[in-house]
Image 1 (cartoon, rainbow, N blue to C red):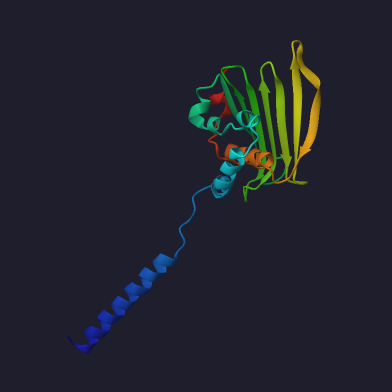
Image 2 (cartoon, helix red, strand yellow; image 1 turned 90 degrees about the horizontal axis):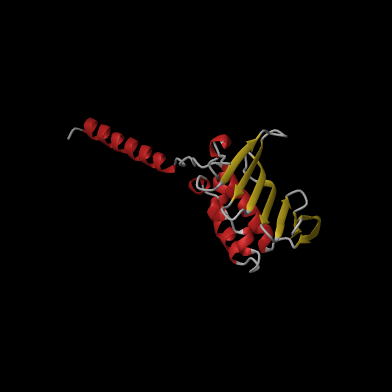
Length: 196
């Protein structure tokens, strides 16, 4: 083989090798939303939080199986609403559920649209004949508040039993996990999902 052809062949192979190496080093774009990335990153810790909930609270607070578009369509009431921004780059979403036994659930979350980081989560569940249980987590002071309203034959008590929960415990972590899952839920049109 002539020296000129040999040099051209060597140059072509070197160019191919450099191009192949460059292609391997190009990072693949992550198509997930910031909410999906955070939910995926914290999935293991979130599962651990639900697994360590106090026995009486686990059936009240663990609604992860209900946070699915196909499940929502089968409920007597499943309404998901995206609210407008109160502040720039803020996402606000609320989910209202009514189960077949008349249990009512409301979940509300506020997060940063760019990072997906939660700012506020509220959870409320009314259990027929027993009362209402609520948990509110706020990022500003990293505080989780528990509220309980008793139910009597004439209705829900106006007075709530209220208390703060320890930081880092399973309840605050579970409440945040529900907020993250709510933000990953497909919620394109609340009107199409509302049933009465």
